[in-house]
Length: 430
Image 1 (cartoon, one colour):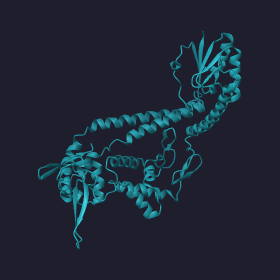
Image 2 (image 1 turned 180 degrees about the vertical axis):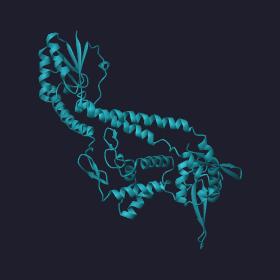
Image 3 (image 1 turned 180 degrees about the horizontal axis):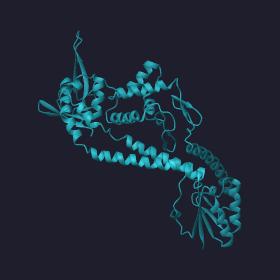
């Protein structure tokens, strides 16, 4: 008994299958990539050498149209070859020309129509053209790419600038509504902050990203800072990212791990207010007393000025530099290969379609490497640590500005209680 197998792969849509994935002991495997030359060889070999069974994943791999699939099924049946579709309920021995086959052929026709649509989208990806769908606010469609909408892009740019300055998503959403009358939800604002289009990149439904396809609204450095702020805010309790007090969301009890909330106390007929840090879910009975906010703030500034330079000095900067250099070299190698493709087309080594496919893969790999490079901490962290270790630096800041810098360096502030006394421990992000 002779068993053969055939697979067709469209390089625009799928990757080459593994020859050992059939689950049968196969005498020979015929594989086509883009064109069906091996299918013609298979038919010729069946006429001269014969075969008992042909394994195929799906019937639509036998042709681009329903007529081609039907003709080749009839041709194989006339030669006595039984066709078995491993991913479809079809075996030519059990389904000669019955209603099940007709139903299956209609399904094949629908699948081929869907495939042609996906092939069109894939060709657009090779040309780095925008995907179908609504254009992000701030852009409009140009000739094969996104172009800046000069009437709406300043709104988006101002939104990003406000977020970079204050690090508050909800605050930036409110700012947009107040200044421009542009009302968006917090979810939409978060999508804006993470949308690759605003960074000059094009993202597709398959999750792949191509860099530098159009004019960006924010620079790469600003995009990296946005990502760091979003990661930082994700570690904080909800709604504390936009809280007016700099310690909000950072202070926790070392014993019960509950977050301490900033509470405000006022006296009747007096303008003065008193701020305290209180644990609302304290398990102790009686509950732990509140702590004056100003005392915690002063001790936090004192601890940061003393310990931050030491923490930064303990970081392994040579290893960090080595990682950055390695990523930079990998990006340079990919860009060098990309620059060689036009010469390979001109010399006839590569055809245009193959070169486009190779260029697309190289550009997506470059985008992934650039994303890994962007998440690394800035190289000037040591000089920044020296600058912020001066107490006067913190005292000259507003609470909003202090909130920004605290969250840039501090993971959490632990309050350690000992009888009626307490002290704090600052835990840095790095």
